[in-house]
Image (cartoon, rainbow, N blue to C red):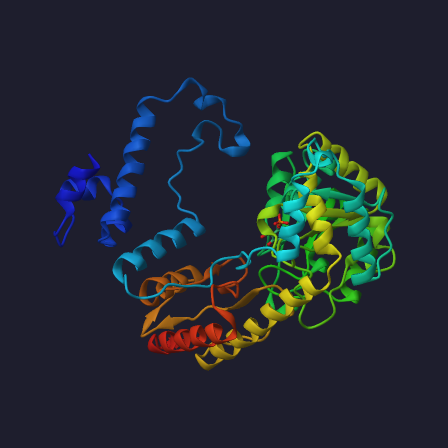
Length: 459
Ligand SMILES: Cc1ncc(COP(=O)(O)O)c(C=O)c1O
């Protein structure tokens, strides 16, 4: 069927009746056989499902769409980016794709960590379930928190490992959220704790991070009725994607509010190694923080260990225990060999220091380059993301939002960014692109400048 569709389409300026009846307009307008094939397959698969829904179609829980699960036709942001990338590669096979869209470190874990892993996988002691983690990892995390942030933690009771901080953020709502409860979260942001809040029948109260508020949430906008139902406030500093770093004063205000309104603070510190404008700051370094919350840490970004899936939750002992109880009922712990290798990483300050220096250097180059192209951007406080107002038009073509601007950059110049329209139109550039050392970065920046200047962007 798809082959018939494609042969009908091939070479025609307008879609035939058959093609236009089956393919949505955005598919045939691309004139891309690959995309059309994908759409056609999708449509055909969906019409087949309508006719032959399996008995379990009606069994899906409402939280994932109920009986409509799998039938949606909305195309999500990252899928749109993927499709535009495929189209750019087909349309301009000789033009290098410059990918600022990837939110993952571009290097393998450091060699000493990999070597340690190589030894540890042969140790009999590491073979079994790791449950809530090996004590040596907790101790290494506590040493790291003390050395890097001046935070004192009892390794036994105030630290628990997790299989990446994403899983911790997914599990923490299970500790607190009953139907009707509220989690306050900031947008744009990392949505995992909010998704799970909703899974438990809670609701998310979103506070926008706006440039005019210096990318801090406006807690004064929260009504008494919302505070009364709020069980958790989830923060993320250094913030993804805005790049804002927290201040001691901000964290101190959060502690005060938590005591006043009686909620739990979860501070997501996944990007904390990548602090540029100030020394990395832990929420737990603020007086009183350990009485009201926990912080989630990760070896993903700051240690080039994204795929290793290792992090920890630390802070208030009772809250850490509640997390460990939920975790114990969800997974059986990260492979002990990975925990042992992570200890090597945590004890070696040259790793996070080197990674921070590299991404800071890349960020400085990107900011300088984009400024020369008209972008109104400044060095972010931290993270490997630059969050900057999207252009309003290119060569006279106006953009209704950041998504249109991002699509234009990909399809016209093979430059990939991630659009954010949750709190104004912004583009996110990640400096985790592939480049061979500082010279490779310079060459890439020169190429970006030349392509961007061609576009005649306005802001
Ligand atoms: C803000 C933020 N928090 C948490 C995570 C999860 O990190 P991990 O599960 O790799 O520790 C990410 C990953 O992209 C993130 O960007």
